[in-house]
Image (cartoon, rainbow, N blue to C red; front, side, top):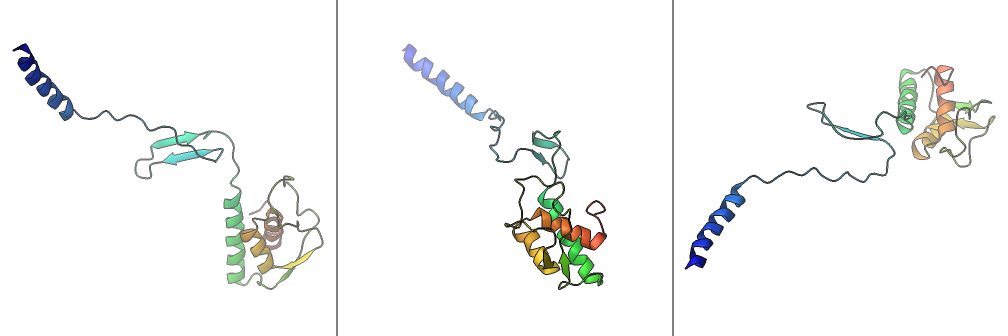
Length: 145
């Protein structure tokens, strides 16, 4: 007889446990290949995930995109032409790490290329020296962009 009294109690406890809200466990830390990362909720501004978010990081490809954009805008304004031939200046490889992306082979000082070709090197090969050459050509310095 005692078995039959225990079963209803167990059933009630099981139903009660099933109706309780599930505990939300924090997700495992995502595995990302980037050295640094920040994920922010666009609506609230809350930081949802961060990895080395306070370390100095250089914008790399974002800078290349901006250089390409400013070059295209200079073409549209008529300040330069897409078929202008540009000579790579002597210091076009300054501030570049030896292992940074380049035109492969690297654009050497004195080499002549059109603005269009330099844009291709910038956007397809991610060539840092091409960005330096374009920045120097459209603004007079790699530091004023």
